[in-house]
Image (cartoon, rainbow, N blue to C red):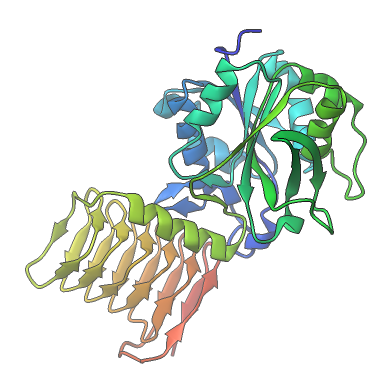
Length: 360
């Protein structure tokens, strides 16, 4: 089958256990990075590579994902949803997507991965060469936490999942490309010790069969946004890469320093904004200080409070909190109220959706 007719397969299942309580009531792939759900970066990345027929593998949070993505038209894509009844592994997701993929070569993209600048060179190389599989590698400090590739004379000789003694520091990150041979591979797999069909075993099967498995080492920023600190880091990196934009209003009593993005309908009154930061549509900032590396999503209100290096999700109210809020993840429809004042101390918060806190 022609390599120019690639499909896309994005994994958006999983329970997001490392992000609890932030993900008790929503999909981890919908956590916003610089006010855009991380899943949207993957979809836009594929569309930017000319891949518009996309399957999204979903689990318990299917309704949330479907509500956010819909039929994909807003991205210039056509989206098909594929239900995975349990998180049985990445290769299992490929196996159940066989009917959708219909033998086409495809890009497999883990929906909580973020590659700054996209993967177009990776895709173009696959289109132009004779490989059966391409994997994207990144040097990491803790390879034992990843699938790891061993290269011999530049060739992928072995791939092993979370080895106690890693053969290299080259992690297999969450973007892969396969041709039709992968369907034979996933049919032959048996569950690993952790009860999953492993994508690393899939790749090793292709290697053992003598098929061409090629690797590219990523030289740009990548993050698996599966943990709290990862989200804050990715948010800061993406904010730093975005251009300033002002579609909202700022009164004459407010001050702006650094790169600031104000989306449509934002109102800033008697406040200090120090970028890089973004404030989402129809949000209000009053008598507050919003510090660098902060994202405040749409329809939020912050009054009499100080926030820095944090992610605040939509429809949240933060009012008269005396402590400086830093390094925090605050969910949707949260109400956080205090008594005012300006304590020198800081607080670090992780609040799931619909949390209510009043400091008396």
